[in-house]
Image (cartoon, rainbow, N blue to C red):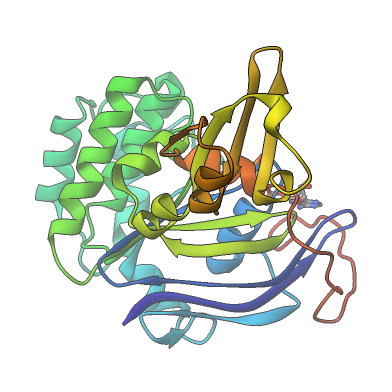
Length: 302
Ligand code: ATP
């Protein structure tokens, strides 16, 4: 079963539009949501949460329509966003006391355990937290009400490598309990090398692919070789080529043909970042979907 299904999502701003955004997060899966700055990741995640109002499309969580079952769905998901979701003048305990009554399965025991693990003091003021500490606090809250789905926007950005690793361990532990799912957006693609099962890429408001990470990593190869060997037959085999004084580096999905045509080339595995860079700007223009109207910024819904 899919924990999250997004189908045909459209949303227009003055200078940007999400177009026919469709993807899903299956149960038992950590999905990494990748894309360049301004590609539409946050807008998509805000739409899933009902914070941005799409002009078209359908969002289902746990098999239920997101709009019609908002209360039950919000009870079952944990959200980690980096958009000042806390009142900075409160202590962590006071903030927790504001938020926890909204959850039917809130566990004080779990919360205390996570606060200890993250070395956070409940007496501390939100305003005194570093960015990393704020993300840990958000994660502690998200993990203390038996959430079955975690939705996170750039949870690791700005965290030091040690905290990032700890965060990835927490995610892996969270998934040991069956029937759960995670969707998180990130620029730090090495995080996805470590934990993601599936990758969803968005570029300029359109989904480029959703694919099992291992399948993706096997489909692409990085090639290094002599620029002089890049003839008209070989060039089109590459999605991206970077040429320098010491030769070229290219990303291809046709490694076998390249191997035959360029026996001297060095062919290696790729990283998630290589795959993302190779796919930037590849989508063909499509018509605007939905009503096509453009919306101006609003305060609550945008
Ligand atoms: P980043 O990785 O930089 O956070 P992103 O992929 O999350 O980027 P979004 O935040 O979804 O991208 O923004 C996509 C585009 O939509 C941007 O061009 C942004 O300026 C525009 N946008 C987002 N929110 C609004 C808004 N409320 N009003 C007008 N334009 C908006």
